[in-house]
Picture 1 (cartoon, rainbow, N blue to C red):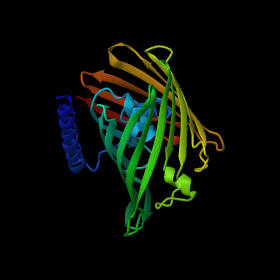
Picture 2 (picture 1 turned 90 degrees about the vertical axis):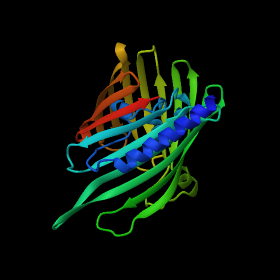
Picture 3 (picture 1 turned 120 degrees about the horizontal axis):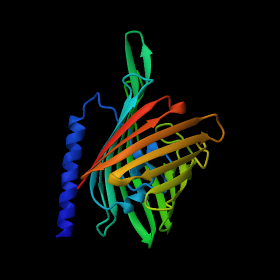
Picture 4 (picture 1 turned 90 degrees about the horizontal axis):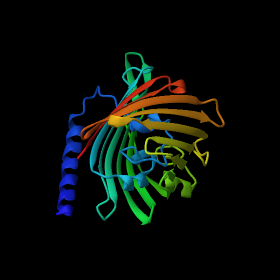
Length: 293
């Protein structure tokens, strides 16, 4: 009976996801993971919601119920630029946890006389996670990407894979590791889309009590992107499902610096979240809605 219910949830999620893809308003603005962004991206060792798809798919093992999520972001510096992200997540039912997601970005406008075109990106992703032993999980993504450069007729497409792990060191401490585009690390070359792969993230999350979470991440640990940075984040949960978040990002080899803040509230089976990215992000307003069923 439980397996039948799980299958029904998968079919329902797929139906809703397809409906969202078909009916998504072209003016809608979206970004992935308002909670993660509110905590400055220090999320590799937390990743217990839809953000796990990007930050650490092994965190899908921490899910407790199926959910459908969408996020919204408003870029204050670039008119009409946006990115969309929707996902369906299924917790472990004895065979591992899984997720389906779609990301679409319309960014980096290029102007020519009479018109403006954008860099467009699609990323379709299947994610899964399984336990290795008690408190130790592994996960991965299989992603199909397609990009269209401004004023070019042909798009470029390719496949990418990610691997990740998470360890519950104790009831209050998690360790997370995530390696994106792992096959490019093995090959030691750029991917089909022309980007250097192998962005490695390592993080620790501490929960001194049930209300407070503190996290620290190392971004681009392998320095393949020349964007090494430290990320710090914190979250405090009040009563009635309300949470406040802050974060800080600091480049190690550059002058990059950004700060973030956010909030979230639980309303019955719904979770509504907001984050603001300041500093070198130049202002991005992010909203997210999750339906848990």
